[in-house]
Length: 222
Image 1 (tube, rainbow, N blue to C red):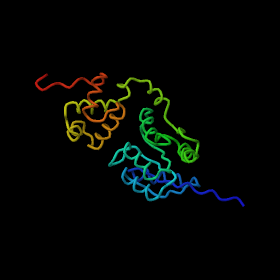
Image 2 (cartoon, rainbow, N blue to C red):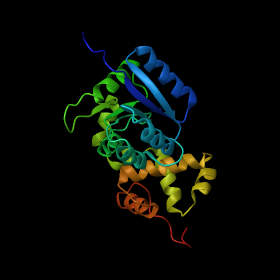
Image 3 (cartoon, rainbow, N blue to C red):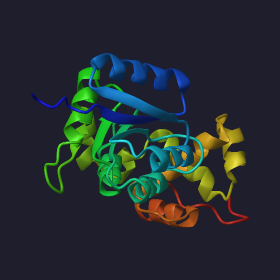
Image 4 (cartoon, rainbow, N blue to C red):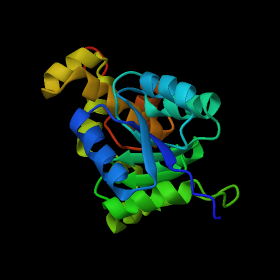
């Protein structure tokens, strides 16, 4: 008698309840997948993964608390056999390359179809040897690979960087741009990743050197 195939155990990590529930319904309805838990932040994801050891973690890039660049290596430590499918609204091959290098097994934009998500989940649990990853971005996202750094940074990211160069705090930048302080932090994390920067000053210096933003004026200059 043939042995029944074990269901794929999935942990869904996203800070939007409706999105988590929607993904959960899609996966459950497909059959062969057991949603074993849900998480709402990077820290919560790592705690749940350490407890549940899911086969697959469906991970949103932008959640409260620690950033995805901290979460991915931590997930690898606490649940090394789990596969990680990043699901994000960022159609960005540069970001995808970075997150795949940090341990993600698949990178899908949120515009992907349910078939693409299901296919990615089933594909990542198949051992295809080291170096096998799944990437789903648009043609426009691929075209941006050859763009200059100034074109890779969004207009909003350049605005945030210019205000950072003026030595404004995150809360001051948020008020100036009429956005949430958490959004400013996410923009800065993205900027650091794209420029390979390790601090605010490093990001500003690299951006100025690459002519992405004008050099900050010294005090007394007009």
